[in-house]
Length: 60
Image 1 (cartoon, helix red, strand yellow):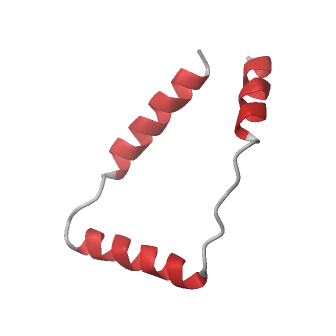
Image 2: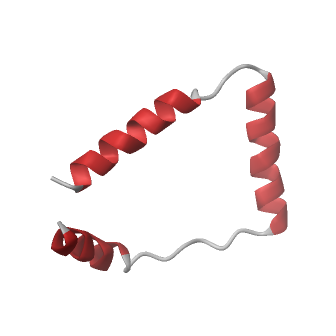
Image 3: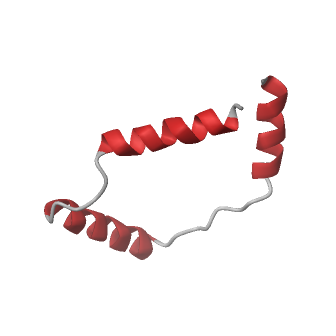
């Protein structure tokens, strides 16, 4: 299993993260807050279920 994680990490190491400006981050937060107030979004239980499923797939 450790070897699989190392191989996965090597593949993931090639991507770069986008650097956001303070304005972009604030705009994203404003949108999420508005969505939350409107009652839209994904419940945390669903998000964690999806994360668990993705992690299970990586370990197989």
